[in-house]
Length: 302
Length: 215
Image 1: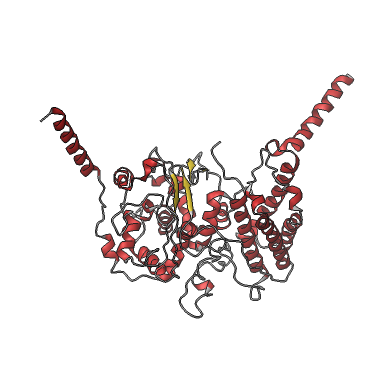
Image 2: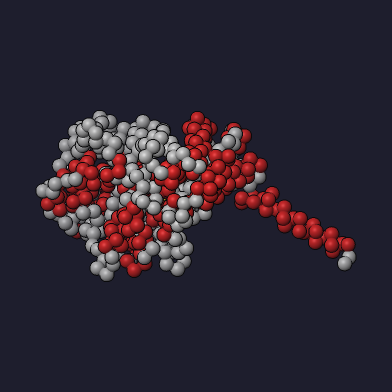
């Protein structure tokens, strides 16, 4: 056989080998099935649907957009993503999903058909949510009105359309370890830490990313000059030189609860949406926990 | 002293005083500058209200009424005058969509005035809560406690399920679906008004003002 055939075969085998080595697999493979056994509390689920940002992304911008039926666009440096319908409609929504399916999506970024999700859906943070919170959220989603609506497709440049390549991205950038509290800190601090890195997923906008969009964990909460929807996203660190260095507790309470900045301005842009659809619904003790954490997050670098 | 030096000093002084007035707000001029000043005035008054609703200062009805009246007065501005079509000269942060959706833009401004007036009424002794209508987009659902169709009587559970009410002495965390404020104290009603008011500010800035982009 001609030489080049051996070369091609060799390269092919190498490629398969690389793919096998680099392809991602979840570190907690039994989580989804274990969660199936939990009884969900839809009241807590409703709370989470707001403060975890589900409503902010999965409800369209128009005046009478149906609740959680998707079709909201998120323009990022990697293209424009459109959120899917997460009402219980069996064909266009997630009505056919079990709790295990839901937990797999939220903590592994994998659909019931085994497809990888783009990390515009922040499973990279939701992986930190507790199984009980996820079961609660699912039980709320089971109870909202089912809406038959098929949102638009994502609009991504060619290189990013290969979903299968996300397996490599996950290997490089997806730390799916569950939440781990800091033993030396108060319960409230840890609740805040849980919210900021888990359901609130603040890190997704407020931490810088590398070229391929992976979060730079070594610069936790240091801001992102080209984050969110192509915006200058400020840092949330409170140490010397940090953005929150001079912020008081009530400054933070007014920011999260009312969208006010310390100089009396009102937030717009993506953070305006975050306040409108998520953080202003934080219960006072949860908001206090977030403030406890943010004003003392320096010691927490993973 | 020589008249020349005196004259020069006066001129220099006049320039130093006049320049910030003429060129404040990053060099804005004309209607762009005027509306930035309008917004500054509203922001300053809003900032002065805030401590009364975060338990930083004890509730002072007089101070609250005064600040809210400032906002209500600014709310009388004729928006067409401040936002003539296409007035997007630098450093304006207005978005062109203002003129595509003028009715909504106008509505939000008028709603700001109405909420400020509700705060005034509350502070002056008549608890008044004006619900937020049509301010939020997206299903119109105002938040937890109202989106669960669990059966009759469950839809308006409000306080026990989520942040539909304030915590005592704390932040008003949620939207109001009450009307009339009948069972609230003046302070509580004013607090709801403050929550609604700031919600409008955030909504308008999100829809009609430029994001902070990398320059």
